[in-house]
Length: 459
Image 1 (cartoon, rainbow, N blue to C red):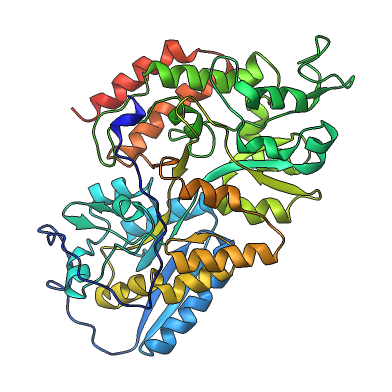
Image 2: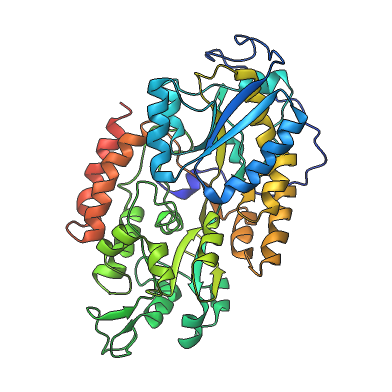
């Protein structure tokens, strides 16, 4: 699959003028189990809504949003429940089955297809049309991720891109000016000037770097680049390498054909694995899968890694050295980053659908998102919130332009590959990618068969 099959994403940031919303012209859903036509109108009686999220860093700004919302809607109380990522999703599924799920929950696009296929979430499009809510003011094509025509299951609340996180002292000691990240290059044959920098930053116990003929890849004390345990989407791990090599997962949002067997992807993922397997520039897969790349980076085990913008504060607060954020390398098809975001979704079993809708609508409004932006945790999905975030990050002494400039590049981003059968795709791809990273199989040997299994899911 070649990247040019995708429509370019025009990510021109729009200024938000007040809270005015224009009418949405999408067709109403014919399948919504509950909505303004089927549900009773809000009674005005005192109602408590349970709202779940997983990110502890986002808890304070959303608590502030809840306080503002309750002032505007004194009959609706918001009870926020936060749990870590690992517990969040199993608890949510348990709640669906037991009938005890929260009324509204923060959703990840990778989970949406399964919730939709099982009828666990409400189509909000009838409310969108009833209240004349527009999705045109959200940045780029983020709103498209949460719609499967004629239905819509949420509004985008924020966006993220991927960049290079680096240890400033290690680059300085290696004589590498971070300015090289403005135009460094990558390719799966020799790694380009990016791999050259990675090699220079990799040191063995005798002080030899990866460019030295005396370099010992079996006795490394500082890795130039920290790879990460594999995943079916490779969001912060390998997605940018594959797409910048003229590849894409499928035919676009909600499509039914995958291309993990594309030679462009095969060579990109093998290069990624070989940074450790063949060259010793990255830690063993066993280390990254057990400890995680962020922990290895914070421990000073490596000079660089790639991660998402939602991790900016974690790295800044959990390292005892100065860090920087650089642009991804320019691949054969340019510099590419996944462009993604989260949303809030209403559980189909809520006893208060109209009140839940009011809360969801407020969560994605400028009133709430400007406040979230000012907390310097994420980049909100509207420009006024982004402006607030940029000012807040600058006040903390963090230059985050690598993330925002990537998002501003009209050819520099691609959407998350949202489709049905997400959990089955994960079940197929995870062990296959693990075997490649471990070196027990090669990408060319195992990816074609895995891709055939994935496409068979849609037959």
